[in-house]
Amino acid sequence: MSNMLSKLIALPDFKVGPVYEKTSKDGIKYTELDLIYEGPVLDTCPDCGGKMYSHGNRKLTVTDTPFLGHPSKLTMNIPRRRCKDCQMIWRPEIRDVDEKHLMTTRAFTDIAQKSLKQTFASVADEYMLAQNTIKNAFTDFIKEKEDTLRFKTPAFLGIDEIKIKKLGEVTVITDLEHRTLYDMTLGRNQASLTEYFSRLPDADKVLWVCSDMYRPFEKSISDALPNARWVIDRFHLVAYANRAMDEVRKSVQKGMTKKNRIRTKKGLAYTMRTRLKNLTPGEAMKIRSCRNDPVLAPLATAFDLKEDFFNIYDENLVSKENAQQAFAEWERSIPSDAMYDDFRKLAGTVHNFYEQIFNFWDCPISITNGFTECSNRIIRENNVKGRGHSFEILRGRTLYRRSNIDSMLKNGTASIGPSIPAKGPVFHFEETKKASVDEDDTFDGIILDDPLMGLVPGVDFDPETGEIFEDVDDYEDDTYASEDE
Ligand SMILES: [Zn+2]
Image (cartoon, rainbow, N blue to C red; front, top):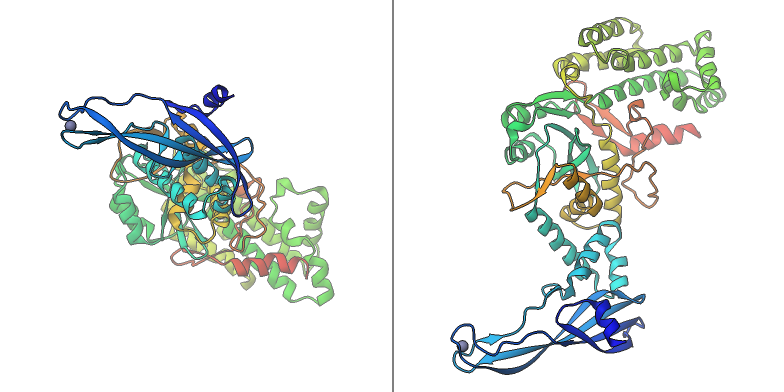
């Protein structure tokens, strides 16, 4: 039995002695194993050559991975010896035990990995440890990763931002070529981004930056990323066409009797936001029937304007010239009526960011931040699990999943090596689409199968600077509530 246990425990230099089934004062059953040291001891002092004598034992209790379904503790008796000449005290080095955290190395790794996905409280229960112990181990795990992993600066870099309650704005930086999350940084303004980019190793390797229309980026990019060209993310841009269309719908509905309003509202917002090619025959009929109705005709016009705006990209993916022409035609097609003013504003925004928007056609890959929405959702979910914890924990939780690190090592965007002055982990995000986070009051993401459908939750923007304001409350009122009014 003891021999088999020793093999199971697999700690070099130790053999398993008595095993106790114990119950903690909180009534939790756990296993305690006494380990007996059987490794080499030193007889001669390495410093002076003097003779070493026994100097008692040190008892060390460490946490191991759960054993036979219960938390387990290992009690190790470690011999100490002392040199009679120089008083040097020796004790064997204990392999596979993390003495700082008082746990086996495998327990440390397991706790860190579990903490990426579970709450600290649930890991603490499993291990019969205090939550703080779990949190500290995880924090050290993050630091360890930062010191040992080296990351390749993306040639195609995406910038996006999300608002996290209690933490504020978080800038999310992605490798768009490899579809990996590169880093997260607190704050979002020109100064903090310029600072971040100037610490980026190989900043000259960044060739393309894709982001939303936030004018201050321009200076951050030109100051710190000398070879980069800025592209406005098409995903963000086309979302404004949906917003403008919604404004037309609202103004049409405002003029109706309540009864008609309810009738036309039922599902209409959703139908109108659906791309023409994805409409069911019934939905297509709904749009068509608007065309001949004097009151509802503007809805069809708005739908067409939205479609034509999306098609500036979709129908002109190879020719920049054609795309620019399509935009010019689209702008001319906006009716002069005031209810279409938001489409006119959008045209103005396109003119303000004309160069950066049409840079898209010069970029060798079809560059978009669309997938960043998915990583943003992971960040939000992690924030729910780690509610109240620091940004560093949120960031570590998001960046250092084992499978992600493994796959990014595989695709060559990271390597293990000495620490570098600027940190910047890469993370291969998992493409999961369904969100199941009900308790999250910060969660406002709707993940669509086709992100380019452009349904960006709660986006509002300043047409002058192009700055995007995320307004969760507005979105909820606007879209969910009104559907069931
Ligand atoms: Zn000595």
